[in-house]
Image 1 (cartoon, rainbow, N blue to C red):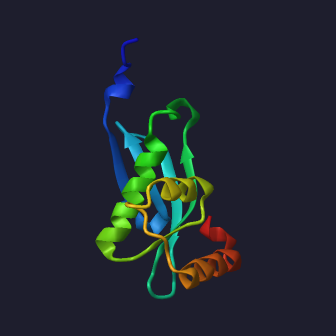
Image 2 (image 1 turned 180 degrees about the horizontal axis):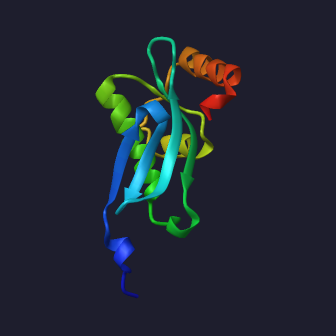
Amino acid sequence: MPQSESQSTPIEFRDERKAGRLLAVEGEAVVGYIAYFVLAEAPHALVAVHTVVEPAHEGRGIAGGLVRTFYGIAAAEGVPVVPLCPYAASWADKHPDEAPEPAAEVVAAAKAQLAADSDLW
């Protein structure tokens, strides 16, 4: 089956830190995202709260690409990732070489910050 025009367009990942979104963009359309926040306390971990891929784009590896990119951004910044999103947590379990486990106190701080501010997701 030939690929459609939209499937041949590469996915670009854009970090919109102020909005708390890592976007997956194809052409000019957002086809998925990770909703996240930055932990207020040091070490200022990136906390993945929700991973979404638009239904018409599921099954193309976009969610995995988002999570891999998210971990790459955190590594470049020298901070841990706390994968509170079930998809991101599952991906991390399957890719321990790319997704170091955060310290328990960082996870606890991320959960506390999320519980205190439901606007974070």
